[in-house]
Structures are given as structure tokens and as C-alpha cells.
Amino acid sequence: MTNVDKIPPRDRIFNAAVSLFAQKGYSAVGVRELATEAGVNISMISYYFGGKIGLLKDIIEQFYNEYSEIIKNSLDNRLPLKEQTKQTIRSIVNFFKSRPDLCRIGITELPYDSPEIAEFKSEKVLAVKELIFDRLFSNFSLIIDDKITISIISPALISVIYSNFLLGDVIRNVTGVEFDDAFYERYSETISTFLIGGIMAVAAELQNKKGSSLF
Image (cartoon, rainbow, N blue to C red; front, side, top):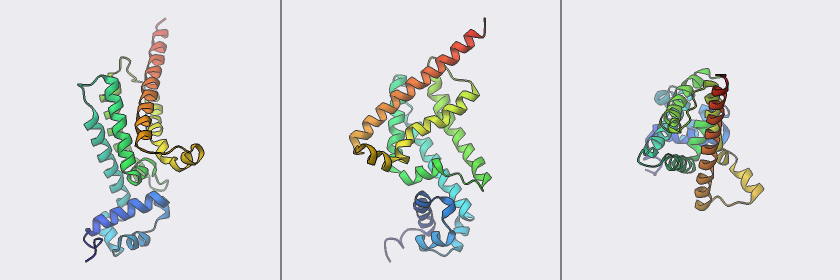
């Protein structure tokens, strides 16, 4: 028995899907290719996951479960708020760095022909939004409670943190920067400063507009 054969079929299917979906995109991968990559019979994909769409949902759920846990474990009320924010961003960056394929699928994959995925993913995003906004950023002296602003900021936050991972090869070729541990430490610090300053500026502007509307 090989090392691959020792891995349960369900895990082999899951791992194969994470690798293939990240490389090619969900829509470009067929169940036959998945089965071949995992070394299983096609019927096993339906047996364990209810088909390819169920497999994608499982991957997205795994991503958001791990993502939420990372954030929860990073929130330490004993730290000053800005340090707590930096610690959270650093943990998220390390997570993206250690699980690139899973994160790529969880963040970017949204098949246009599968509205159920959009609804499913929305529930997961809401849980993360509540963690970041309701438990972390709402502690800033100025609170953002405008729904339109939050709808703009929420995806922008994840885009700012994740853009380097999504465009890494292009950025590396253009800048010649080496993505080593020192780079990612500075990356976390810079992104944290950028996000804190940006959120404070947006919150202050909203507060000023509310104040102006009173007169």
C-alpha cells in the first residue's frame, strides 16, 4: 500500500479538488479529472459530497471555518486596540501564506451558474464580517454603522490583505522583491497601518457628515 492509498478516499477527493480548483478554476474542472487526480471512482464524488457543487461548498466551508478560527484566536482584549488589529492582520497573512490554494478558492471562487454558492458564501462572509467589524473595528472611537459604507469596506479589506497572494507572481516579476519571511512581516505591518488609517478616516468622514446634517 502506497502513502497515497493510506489517505481516506474522501480526503483524497477533497485535496485533489483544492489543488485543481485553485489551478484551473471550479468551472474548468470535470468530475472525471477530479476522480483521476484523487485515484477514486467517479461515483465516490457523489457519495461523499453529493457532486462537484457539494465539494466546492465543503471547500468554502473549510476555508471560512479556519479563517474565522484564526480571527477569533487573534482577538486579545488585553492588547491595545491597534496592537490587537496588527496581531489579527498578521495571523490572517500567515494563514493565507500557509494555505494558498484553499484561500484562493474560498475568496475568489463564485461560479456564475451556481446561485446557491453565492447564498451559501454570503452566510460565511457575514460571520467573518461580524467578527471583524462587530468585535474588532467597532471598538475604534468612531463606529461605522452605515450599511452602504460597510458594503464597500468589507470586500475592500479582504482585497487589500489578499491582493499580494492573488497577484504574487506578477508583483514578483515587476518589482523583483523576494517574498520571504521578512517581507511578510513588513507586509503585515504595512497593511495594518493602511487599514487602521483608512477605517479611521472613513469613520471620521461619516461622523462629520452626521454632524453637518444637524444644522
